[in-house]
Image 1 (cartoon, each protein chain N blue to C red):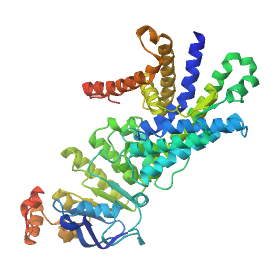
Image 2 (image 1 turned 180 degrees about the vertical axis):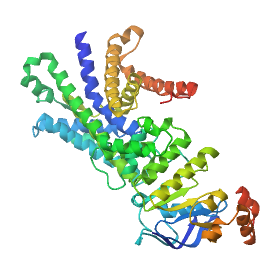
Image 3 (image 1 turned 120 degrees about the vertical axis):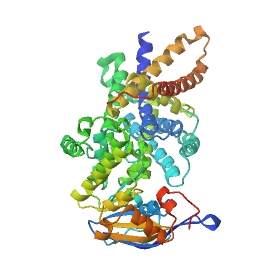
Image 4 (image 1 turned 90 degrees about the vertical axis):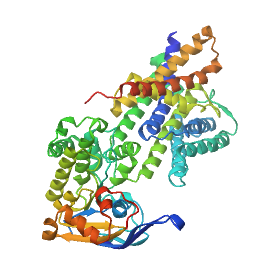
Amino acid sequence: MAALWIHAIEQGLAYGIAALGVFLTYKVLSFPDLTVDGSFVTGAAVSALLLTRGVADPFTALAAAFAAGVFAGVLTGWLHTRLGITNLLAGVLTMIALYSVNLRIMGRPNLSLLRVPTAMRAVESAFSGLGIWSTLAFLVLVTLIVTVLLDLFLATEVGFALRATGDSEAMMTAHGVNTKTMKVVGLGLSNGLVALSGGLVAQYSGFADVGMGIGTIVTGLAAVILGGTFVRSHRVVWMTAGVLVGSIAYRVAVALALRYGHTVGFQASDLKLVTAILVVVALVVPALRERRKRKEASC
Amino acid sequence: MLKLDGVSKTFRTGADRVVALRDVDLELPRGEFVTVIGSNGAGKSTLLGLIAGAFLPTEGRVWLDGEDVTGVSAFRRARRIGRILQNPLAGTAPSMTVAENLALASRRARRGLRQALPRRTRRAFREQLASLGIGLEERMECRVALLSGGERQALTVLMATLARPDVLLLDEHTAALDPRNAQAIAELTCRFIDDLALTALMVTHNMEQAIALGERLIMLHKGQVVTELRGREKAGSQPSDLVRLFSERRICDDELLLGTCGTAD
């Protein structure tokens, strides 16, 4: 049972970075970006390729995954802001294109990382005293660093402009900000995080697969929404922390469902359906509640 | 400071083309405050939009402090031009706090990775908010979404003037407020324009306001400047004088008073 919890928390952290990416586009920029289903795999593919070829250490491979994700996000941003393609379609187009790109990167649909040194194995051998906690400790550290950096970025002038762009584009133009550039920056950073998460997940689970990104947007949203119900705050620092809490909560729920779901007739393959229903409920319930009370507590 | 040189603007082409502005010349020396009146469709908002860079003029040039800014994009121009719209929701970022909104407004130049809201700046904002006299300095950590329309517009006025723009454009910015708030925001705006000696262009539907405020009044009709009043001539006029003046120029009275009457002339 303890192993179930540890694994769920580890996954929650590794996928949590992707959820932070989704948070950045969906919540901060108000841009529902579907690129992530592709860029998650791109991160995994780049990181897996570099490791199987033996040309990079696991940490450099993660940095490369981040960079590849930034590139994918910038492409979506460019399709949207320069070519005027609507936000949803721009994301879908990049996502579809990435499917082929990801296959090209890996050379086949699946790359195994069982025989190569991954970040987790490197940490395990370097800090053998940590025992079974070494992977968890490593993922906590990585997630913490990423979250703090994201928080710091969102508190800079550019970060403020990014947040305001998602809020009111016209207002930001009136205050001297090129909102198109802001969108490209936000999409790049977001997909960088998603790809970093993909690289981490690949190294963590020991393989990269061309289908592993399906539903990244939905699980990311599930984490963002769950996080919003656990941590009710409008401060960025709390919101990002909430996303991680939401991601862990989601993975714990999935782990429990996979273990005990069969008792109520669920199969493992029902997971995505259940997730989709969960997200629909989580999206609709607050809106209904809002309609009922309308008035927000004064500040 | 601001100069329009033979500016025309035609929206759409073909059968449903609309000529919004027709060969308008306008010059505002530094520090002048001009009010603009005119019926619906007279071209008032088009005029401000052209100055702000929301769209390009069909003909003519726009000059800002001796520089031709005709082709300069809106966000670049916004570094030197402050603009307040009628909708109080349009000028602020609702999900961000009062202090964060001021931080957004205080920096017009290139934005970098500096901390956006250091403690020192926060203190300065507190004093500036106190000058609004509506207690916003005690609510700096409130999200703007929780403020009333009047409070939001007062904040917008402060935000638009915070970076000391070369030109301030006011597009019926009190029209969506209740009379008491409208009065308060108009007074506040005038105080900022006076204190900072701003060059300002204010569109209004309120003729008393147009007469009482500013140094010059211009009347637009069908995309052209048809009347211009200055100094004593302006100060001595009554709203009824304006109406008479306009009817002499064959403009329907109802159109002026009610802002409707589309078939007049």
